[in-house]
Length: 326
Image (cartoon, rainbow, N blue to C red; front, side, top):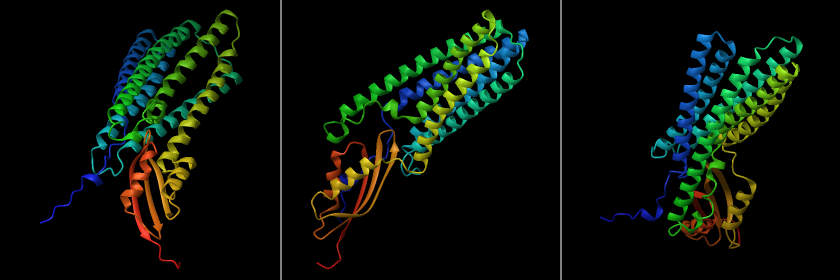
């Protein structure tokens, strides 16, 4: 009995880049650091009766939830890559986490906005000494978190770079699109923005509190909060737009679609009757194309034409002979 050789037609369904594991470890480390800080602040706030410490402790808790969610999503996405139940891997798990992080950033900006407007309308006394201590502690933790995330991103980029070189001999089109993956990992970027946003607000808070304590400029604190709210809202909007486009499979840019079409139709005979290009990883796209031609070639020929386009990791081509009059 004849046995079909399927090897030339099989392809990998793991679309995550090799740097996702180092970035995931960095997210877990920052989550742990944030949780420890939260516990310390809550305990110190309860012992000292400081509302500022108590409030910032719960604030740290919201960041721990966002960071932990990002780390968990990255872990689940890597596991889903080898699960046949997920047709195109688990990247959308990370995109859902990024979208949730964006919503949390919007909530933080709205909270800052409402609180700042309330204080401007009805100024209240501030315990400057305690508030400055909390802001400095938050800044130290956030600087450490940024360092951990930057190191994780650098390790991830190095791993992706090495992985790309290891496969360059077998897949020439792989080389050149496996760089700077950390910049294309939206889930990681959303978590990173949480930390950066908190660091920025800590710096602004220290400036505002110092101005209020030593210069008597009490309105500086709510004004700085308004500036921080606008800045965080702009970051959140960017994350939400990118994540939402990915979740509805609207991530292929026109330039990529045009290049796929022109490459398949390059012989002057083939014409595409249908083309779908969508993103399934940080730098990975799928293509489903329907080719109509007077003298159709084997589907493998059309697939091989697309190998020159970096990032196309899952290509499906169906071929039809033109039935129109000649």
